[in-house]
Image 1 (cartoon, rainbow, N blue to C red):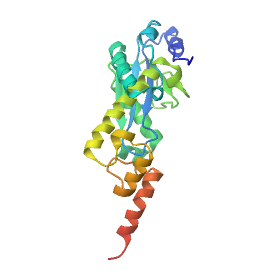
Image 2 (cartoon, rainbow, N blue to C red; image 1 turned 180 degrees about the vertical axis):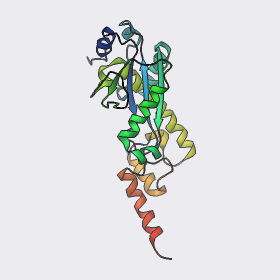
Image 3 (cartoon, rainbow, N blue to C red; image 1 turned 30 degrees about the vertical axis):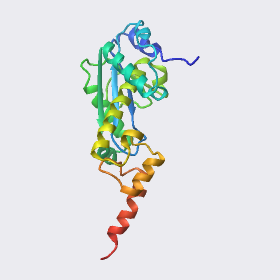
Image 4 (tube, rainbow, N blue to C red; image 1 turned 180 degrees about the horizontal axis):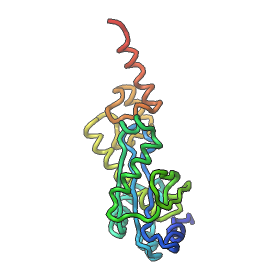
Length: 218
């Protein structure tokens, strides 16, 4: 049976007196279009919360229907939660790692409670002067990070569905901006939209023919 995330990492901080432990994760870091979205979740410092949030795990292991159902449960029981995003333009200007940290900082800023410590999937936040632990697969190991992964994913999926209405033809609602075959075909046919990450190599390749055409003399 697959192991579900636990409160082991949260309890280390709780026992040290850090009551409000925020789990942080992002969605959309590897996509070619749309924002990178981060979420922060502070769970009650109570081991019994694990039973209440049974089924919460890395969002990539869940169906869209499961994510939506668990999202409702997470926002109901969390002491505080917040989301933040960095746009495609910010990703192009700053780079994806810095933009991801910016989205995480905005998620922290959106919390109704000040966090005392952080648990983060992979990335540390050097600009945040709080005790923090960042480790690979935190969304599969820490319950609060897993909860954040679900909020980030569901928020971003809804945002990409909105972008589908503003830029029809790319299939954003279907592939969420990731590099599927259908997305590649749309890029070749339509060129990049205003929401594509032009610093990403696949998008640059789609831009190249247009740039060559613009450079040709009349």
